Length: 119
Image (cartoon, rainbow, N blue to C red):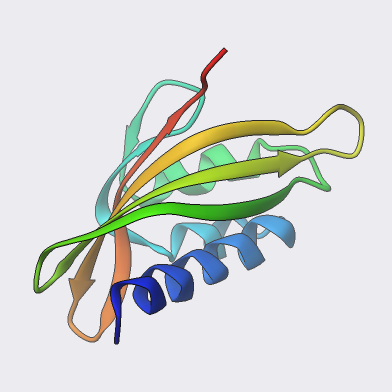
């Protein structure tokens, strides 16, 4: 599987769960020890990811565009993306997102998630 296929497979699962407002399914896209940095203080682990997305408003959607991909090792893929988060009650928010995917057994999961917002 190519780096782009790996990244798209994981991010499509993440997007589907975000769009459906299913925080536990979002968290299942992450490793047990994932470092997660949204637009609030960081957390470590799936429970923090689930709590973050549970607190997001209903109707939140995510649309991503891959900017760069690097395979750092056989079991590590780095992705840099632009993500537009859509809301039902306010303008969309565009952010940059860096993710580090790690192969765990036969699955690829997000081990690091870092959002940045450029003014």
